[in-house]
Length: 461
Ligand code: SF4
Image 1 (tube, rainbow, N blue to C red):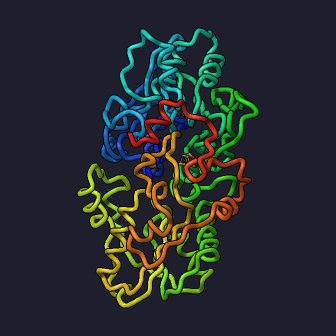
Image 2 (spheres, protein in one colour; image 1 turned 180 degrees about the vertical axis):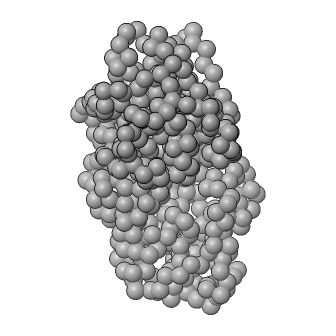
Image 3 (cartoon, helix red, strand yellow; image 1 turned 180 degrees about the horizontal axis):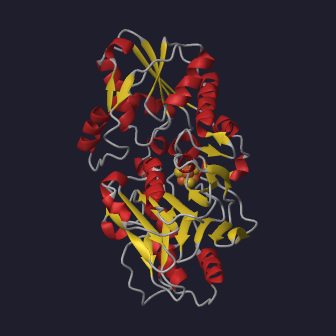
């Protein structure tokens, strides 16, 4: 499963060179998207900046690249594509001209009514194939004459997942969708406000966490300070549960609690529900590590490193074909033979999507001497596709939508397989079930996707 972007913004009251802290902020959000990156700044008169393909340090590979991007407002974006292909035209922030002056926009999430919204602008010359440009174009072409009224009217038309950072010549705005599907946090440092997809983006620049932006809220930061406006009320909250399981960095916080703590608890509950007769617990690094530590402490089985991850490959090594997927796992993970040889191993992973990676891991552990391999998963089976910007694959590719747990065990060639229950997953997040999106696990979608989109994704396109 892959995340669909990270957004970042800074408004400073005493500085005019924000490209560098924005660069550091994007660097800390790199796990949310590695296909393209971009930074734009405003000095009140004009925007400066650029977008490019690749990692943040590839797009901005020297200080020279940042030095001309002056101004007291900046926004940045890292992208992984779930709508629109991986091309420079789809890189963000998107810049559009409007009667309000230039607007820059960065988007994390996925709209489910893009076609309908696009049809509202039949004469608009779209430069990209993204839903994000549709939001920017609707805002730029709004009949409203007041910017905040135009933004509110635009947001009310959008359905699906959107955490946005928006920059005008004199404002920085952070927005969360009606359901709060993707996270967004606000921080403060010295004389500046910072908005970031995750709190690790605040930490890196020394900003203190202030609060999460609420579902249906916009925060507007300008020369008068920070104002909050509720643009949508009364919709069901539905924060993506996979932020807890896998996407967010473990050192990030949500509601004051670290994702690391949640994942350790996922492992503890998993041990209670799915114990295993084994001599050692290992993790599929990196995302399986906190849950393995929890599992090991609850089961009182030693935890050890059993596989080493090559961290220089990146989280989204492009794997267009099965052959590349096979090579991809070997490039990414290598077992520590002496640690696993002759032992009964429990291996913890955060999820199983297609099952191909799990099977390669089990084979790799056996080939390197593991006596038994017991796979434990710190989330329930993924049964349904995601329409909100996470690349979960289509239903036909999701192994749990097509096989029983025993069928999956046979396919991945493990001695045993156990998943965490939905009940324990919810308990570990410390949030009520009705404030979470669990749609890929239970099929209860907080925002219903149009029939056409559903039939394509369910049928396997
Ligand atoms: S469907 Fe699954 S991956 Fe998508 S937002 Fe909901 S919980 Fe997250």
